Image (cartoon, rainbow, N blue to C red; front, top):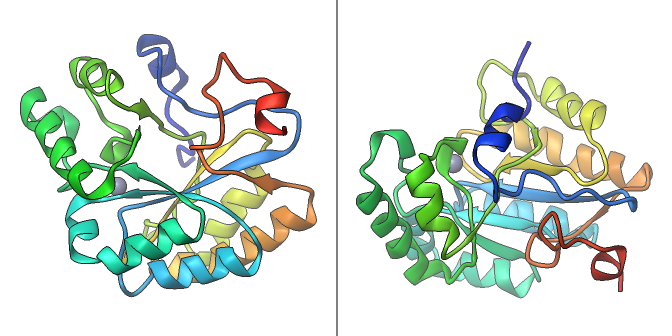
Length: 218
Ligand SMILES: [Zn+2]
C-alpha cells in the first residue's frame, strides 16, 4: 500500500502546517514541486491555461535563478509561487541555520510567502523558524508522479480515486516526473472539471482555522 499522504500523527505533533483546506465547494489546490524546468513547466502552464486552472508552484531557488523567463510566465498566468528551498535540502540532515539560509537564498528569486519542505521532512526547530516567515504547506494527496515504480495510469488513478474537496494535490514539473505527468495531468484535470471540482491557488485560499465560505468564494 503506497502512502498517499503524510501520517496524521505528524499533524498533531506539529501544529500550524497546512495539509488541506476543508471546504464544501469541491475546491482543490494543485501544486507543482521542484521546477521550474524548461522541458516541463511551459507545458504544464499551457495545460492549465487551456482549462482556466490556477495552481501553486513550489519552486527551487536554483531553478528560478536559471529560468527567470519561466518564473515570469508562472506569475503572468495568475499562479502562486512558493519556496521549496534553493537546493532541495533534506531537513533532517541539515542544521537549522543552514536550512533557513538556503530557504532565504531561494526567496531572493522567489519572493514567496508559502513554503514547502522538500520530501515533507522538516524538524520541529526548522518548522518554528520557517513558520515565523512563511505559511508552511504540505499536502493531503500525492500523485506519485515522481516514482518510476508507478505507471502513468496508476498515477492518474491516485488522483481520480482519492481526490476530495479541500485536497492539496502534489505533482512535479520535473524531468523525473515528466513521463507520468504528461499522461496524468491533462486527464486528471479533465476528470476533475467534469466531476465538479474547481481550483484555486494557495495564495487565494485561507489557512485552516480562519477559513470561511465568504473568503473562498466572495
Ligand atoms: Zn521537492
